[in-house]
Image 1 (cartoon, one colour):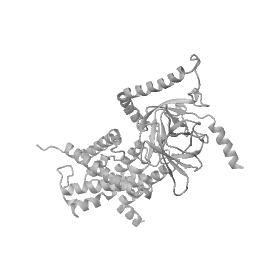
Image 2 (cartoon, one colour):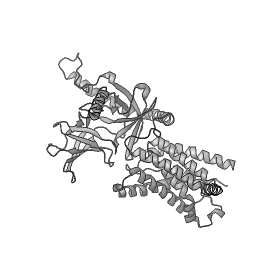
Image 3 (cartoon, chains in turn blue, brown):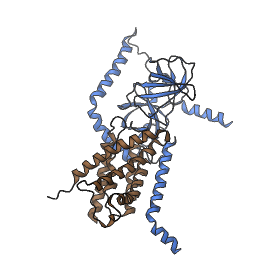
Image 4 (spheres, chains in turn green, cyan):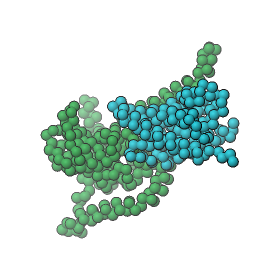
Length: 274
Length: 168
């Protein structure tokens, strides 16, 4: 007994190191699997509050560019409105099909990372506003990411610039599906993989979200094809997609509630159980 | 004793705040980011409590991980550096470093520089390996480590010179 105590006492530093190393490695490994630990994320009172303060300061400095973006969006909406025959009746062409305004939560990005392999955004709305994990996040230009963790006032979002993110997308013209991933190299480009060789792809074609995902509605803009090459291993096309969004400069975003999701999930679960 | 404790707590908070507010937003050429918060572990008193250093660096990394949504990579990197610090001291200042009065917070000498260099390299290598988490990115990890280390060391030395206690 005496010897055990002596051993513990003599090696207390090493044991402490091993204990703490165990904890930190567990956190690291957990963070690399898709469903992350709920413990360490910036959607909490402390870091959320600090980021909120910082972003309010930052937002003031960016008022000009934010105004320009809003004016641009207004101009697009106006041009749609004026170019129709009867301008008194608002047309529904610009809205995303199947999404009502009550299904959208307006939010603001208070922290944005884009310089590591696994990037996350922090938003300033949370459970109290109705945000739940696995909701889609978009802005006026295109998709941004998927909600990951939530707290009462804040939420973290897996950005599309994250090696773990995988989103169903298609070529707008031909309806060929693929998976949208990021190779971790350039913040302006993402990759669409597993596009069948049958598909006719050309530089400049538009990529939109596909209908297979339960998170995003169909036909939300993503970007345009920049480069086409054939994957040596799988013989499928891999496309470099230039994003419409500047992911390094995000202001206001919209969170989509996706009301059919629960129904679809339940149905698929029942299918699997049988 | 007490003043050194307060000095360390002060350093902990200030370096963490500067890292989160300023240096986390620096992103040269898209992939070089400095982490001068390691200065806390580097400047910790040589003969200070070792368990204290381990716990403090664990907390330091944990808070930074929370702010940057990175799981446990900063925590692991800080712990590794804190644990190997005595070995690095031995490497830089010779075997009997414990009996010398080493002040890192002073004019730069080759010994001090090599200590900072090795410490930062250990921290950054652990950090970037865990961040990438796959071996296919080996060269990428190496380049990121080297370039970020250069930037971190430069900023660390500037900070040391700025806060150097003025004797005259």
